[in-house]
Image (tube, rainbow over all chains, first blue to last red; front, side, top):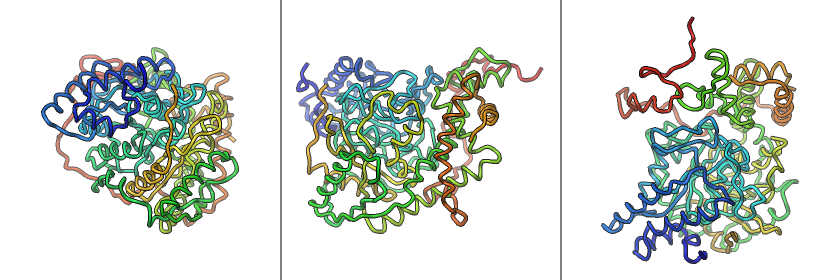
Length: 487
Length: 94
């Protein structure tokens, strides 16, 4: 089959128009997507589970609705969902042995809303176990490969969702971002990825990693697709007490605006040693493009940037150690046959069920919260978090959006960073602050490296200002073209 | 940084088993991360309030009324061991 005979080149917006106009059907689009998945998955491994029959059944229902005259922004469009979001009566493994046989008793709000907008869910995508990682190498079921070059990682933790879009399986997917887990794989796979403001998208039904940082967000090939998906999943949900009750703006409107009165900040702390020249060039290219569109570019300072990783690995692991205490082999998940008594059952079940990186993070989180260390580590990190948040508050008094690299380098190779956890953590150096401050961030493809691998540029905006992000990202996107991987 | 004794104590608190070579490996990898974390001590934060939540939110309340909930069967469906309609665990009281 050639690329032209399936819909791998379509965006969600164009595919939705073709389906609604009757040019094609949802069943045909989903069938073609499933054929493409069957052909390419042996190489890419973006999915943990593909739901062929359910997807086709949902597509049939979408076609019936279209026949009755119903119109919805994503009606009949195939999408993929990261395997840490619950779908009623489907597996949700979080790429962990401990949840290998877990079937969700209810659906995540973001999944329900995506379906309510008409989307057809093809299946659940691969990730680093419990979203802890930056390469999918921590998946208990094997890594996902980057569609641009199968020797390199797709990024993580939402690597499967990013690769699914890059491989042309579906135009939209959902991921989650705790320290960069949407934006970093978006950069590595050459797609658009948005981490919304903390509280913008309900976390109900998202398996918790670090509750003060986790946020669900969309991947798409274009800024427009990400805006459409965000329109679908955003908004208040009474089932999540950290979800914020304020109206969700129509981000399609933000696509049409220009950046003429925008001040774009370039923080000098993001252009330091260790940033690859090609990455600097891509960000400079984006700054020049926005300047040509009428934005004013100014150098700014975010002075506490260098402390972000240290703060993150205290707060995220502390919260993870509490959240993951629930996996004890009693109500759900793996139970070991080994160990003496209840305590033995707990520790054998947890040690057998969790992979090495998850165990390390639980250990670190337990340590920083333990008696005698709480003030020195956890309280200290919370205080420095305030300094990082204040840096952004000051910056957004001067500028509308901040433009930075997404990652210090283009995608790295398998095994390159697995020996030393700190090296892997440092690949998230430019995305972590956004989560600590709770502000939204978007990654847009910014070019290719000399080896033909994608480089992403990141934009950030103030709390609940996804509109400015979409406007700036779309304005930049219009100034350049970006290819699809040859697979 | 971290000692083997501390690692074993933390493992017990976290209900994780750490045996043989795993102890030294855990100490080595966590010590590297803790070294990095210790750079936070360069900052004087005496006057800085901690942030536990980025948005200005208070407690969220709802009426104490029964709403949607799981039935008995659904609650037990994922249990690795159950008996007569209850979760089953190894004997706790002799």
